[in-house]
Length: 218
Image (cartoon, rainbow, N blue to C red; front, top):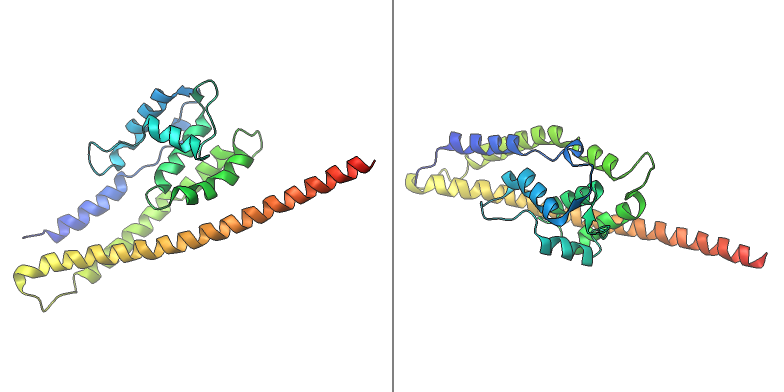
């Protein structure tokens, strides 16, 4: 097996350049029916799929997200721009997090910022988070080049006919380990996020109860 190392690395780096998030301004400001939502998501995120037959979003997925309280119910069978923002977050998260973890992250945001007129709303949060994309892509490129270079220094004592495939295995393994460690870190942070938001909810509940008790004594 012959692997063109330069072509492999260049292909990986070019694929990063092709990854583009959906800008909030490109999401329709009118409410959409479910078919229109799935069509929009398919069109804008299809380039991120591994195989042509892979689906970005289906009606069943949307219904399941609603049943699991990941997504607020539609209004008269229509989904708003903020529904779509949440669906985009879910799409990216579901590759690395469980449904429960995604729920832990999104529920506090949905309860506080979904369809609000405050300065900070879901669209603002979305734009702020995804504004980091360009910087992060450049960091990822540097990291991938570094890991690729390291992998090319492995198995120097292997037979020539085996060296390329073993070095490719090394490259895949070092990237996988990086992903594994980051996933563990993310899970720990999600647990901390859950504890922090639960504490905040408990405090608000106590304050509300205290206020109710005071009013009842008047």
